[in-house]
Amino acid sequence: MLTGMSQWLTLSRAAHLLGISRVALQKRIRDGELRSFDGMVAADDLQRTWPDLSLEESGSFEKTRAIREDAFARRLRERVLPTQEALAQRLFAQGQELAELQRTLTRYHALFEALGARLAAAPAPTAEELARLLDEGMARALAVPAPAADMAALDAMLRVMSAHVTVKPSGREFFVEGSETLLKAALRAGLTPNYGCGNGVCGLCKARVVSGEARGVAPSDYRFTAAEKAQNHVLMCACTALSSEIVLELLEAAVPGDIPEQRVVAKVRSVDALSSGVMRLHLQTPRSNRLRFLAGQRVTLGVSAGLGGGGDLHAEYPVASCPCDDRNLIFHLCRTDRRAASADFLQCVVDGRIKAGDDVSVWGPWGGFVLEHDSVRPLVFIAIDDGFAPVNSLIEHAIAVDAAESISLYWASSQPGGQYLPNQCRAWDEALDEFSYVPLAADDLAATLAANAALPASDVYLAGAADRVEPLAAVLLAAGVPQQQLHIEAF
Image (cartoon, rainbow, N blue to C red; front, side, top):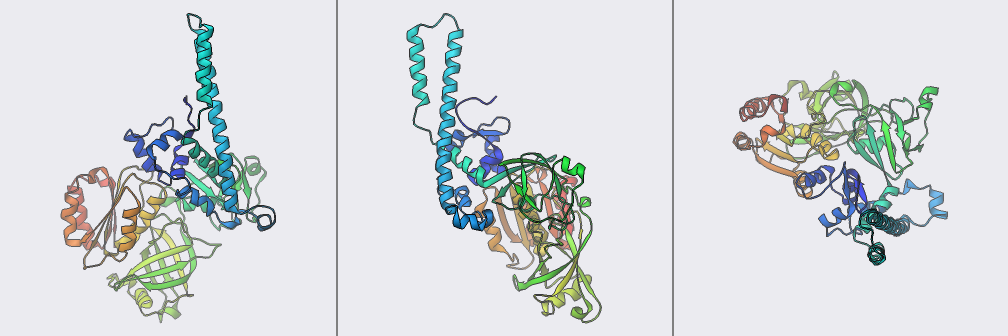
């Protein structure tokens, strides 16, 4: 039973409010720095643990100001409603009033409980004692609000701006910002719901609303059966959350076998150089035919005979981007790729024959180099040269879903300066408390890893050329990493 005069928040709400990951909050609880009850934390405990939190400068407060303008109908916004910044300020002020009313009611409740307990006890209280208890209780009830009231007010405002969605049966959670669709919000949060066209036609993104309410924000041609209507099914691609709390029942992809093989024709958005040895190929799929894949998986790319200068050309590459942005597919192409099957395709990219606007066939996905489902062990990623491509996808996904309390990245290069995205890795290291980045030479990698005593308790992901990956895998197994916790992608 929740007791005391504080407002209690779910862990997801508290993490959203503070602008930190749920995993970081859970670590504070495990370390004894923060108390919790049945998955909830007290607002005044949060204020004490983060005493320097400035609500006006917090990421959550600024996020409410930055909610996209399409959250309100244009006519209402221009002719009826004040600016969104003014609305945010007024909501915050009303939230403060509501929070103080709730706290005052809680104090009065505590006062009546104390008086009731004393009246039931022996010996019977005197009139003077009852008067004293009443005076003390009234003083507490009318006391100046504590700082936690402001945190409760901000939470009340965020409940208007961001709906909290819980998914059954997995128990995963995500937030819907403004009027974005349930599907877009779920993908942005790193979830893997079942979906197809994304345009309200195929019906694959059906979900059942268990509690709360959703409403349509996009047109849909799909027709629900009478049974589906009775069970309160909606299309995630066409609906947003109407209530601040909503529970959805839906299918999620947990393992590679849950995702069917697909074939998509994508457009080249850009081709540019990440370094002297690595090219970046950016493809974009049609809005009505996106690619579903799990972070870390590969696909086959193909170009027509005209671009290839002869027969059709094909090559298999890992997707370097996160599934949370399913339309934009990024690939890292190493100029020194020794795989014969990709040589001609790679040459087309290097020579500029594959350029912006061209069609590229994408089919897949393939491979099982994916995050272990529901594991909470620390994550260790080891990339050798362009093995960073699938690792990048895995890291972006792990960050999106708070997959582990700590993430370590070792990026080894066989050539000086071979880490072709160093700024991105350093940004992760600086922005995330539980992230560490170690760039090093490939020849130093085995000794460095052998000295890491935490590896056997971690999920280890190793990617790169087979002639370097295979001997290193033997080193990791010898260092005590269990076979089932070692995941390998060897090119």
